[in-house]
Length: 499
Ligand SMILES: Cc1cc2nc3c(=O)[nH]c(=O)nc-3n(C[C@H](O)[C@H](O)[C@H](O)COP(=O)(O)OP(=O)(O)OC[C@H]3O[C@@H](n4cnc5c(N)ncnc54)[C@H](O)[C@@H]3O)c2cc1C
Image (cartoon, rainbow, N blue to C red):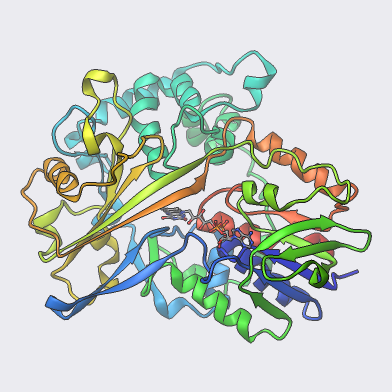
């Protein structure tokens, strides 16, 4: 029987997407979204700032800034929300797609990562890359003997085992700094980079062998929903040849588009009200929120929680005698400080053409940077891929990410010190920025540590049994992947079994 009333907890991208798809799938079901903040969107936050002196405006992101067109659910959502006219694309042939850099601690300036034969000869990291790939190609399978290691391991241990320690430290740690703002020595390879994990199993232990043998191996089964079920319209065609994309008014175009559509749906109510407790009852769930007193508890038949897992753990009460849900507080999360800069100079004067650069873990304490530089994860050259968001092509915006595994200075970020480090990385004297914007985001990216997949399997099994009886789903960045595409896929699939 379809649900009568679903409470969606959390109005981030995951909660909003699940409310949207549930409301379409069950038009007679009441859907109530509870969001504690006075704005929807969670970590998605795009702000347009006026630059009075230039009579211009720039779009600054403090959360996600670029999306990849590899998520089917994201392409579908763009179609369903009619967002195509707002999409800003970066083609795979653009410098922002091809040129990615590293700043290796202890070295000068930036090293370009090879993306073609011509850059292979120019790049200082080419010999490391070529040697590491050859190592993986010829190395026999070397998975751990204990059953634990067979199931999962850290990104660092996986890459060291297959590609060598230097590759794991330089390439692996930099990638993990860029995506998870985390330490690659604790992040699970199986949960964070499932395609690498699967490739190495397919390639009898080797990722490179799996790539080489791909045309000869049986086609991988698509574990997700069959493609035909996605309502793409012509969005797949529209996104051909795209490396990354965003929207005219930033990633927030997605969440404002969802909020607008939810507002028009007669079976959806959005409550600007935080959930204070949740309890399974005989008929469903009792959801209590901050402004409702105990006599006004919302009774719902089903629940989708899209809350950060530690918050869900606090919200669950044990009054009904329900056993606590397992593993909600098992993973740590990263805190990130985002610093946006705008310069009154064209991008060519500020940085090389490209997406930006990441900073790997130093090889030893001698090459460890000091001061603010030791907190840096990397820098995104926003103007290279997202210039069309801003009203003037002669302005440059870039964003520095700090924190994650590196503790931030207690007295905050010193902008002059950060600019001096940036000047040294970019090997040019930078002008004074006309705008700088600092935002500290606490516990913003959940880190799936080794064994996460198994813990989430156990959580799912618990939810299918009494007293939850499969009527509550727990989704969001802390459960599946953290990318916006992963969150949208999870939101789309919530409650599929409730038909
Ligand atoms: C700095 C940064 C950069 C990123 N860059 C990218 C990128 O470039 N590309 C990409 O794909 N992804 C990126 N991500 C990841 C992505 O943005 C997040 O994983 C995603 O937005 C998480 O969405 P969510 O809805 O699962 O969680 P959240 O956004 O955390 O939403 C949870 C919601 O629950 C609400 N809430 C909390 N407590 C309660 C309560 N008691 N009752 C009701 N509501 C409550 C919160 O206010 C929030 O709105 C980035 C993330 C960060 C932080």
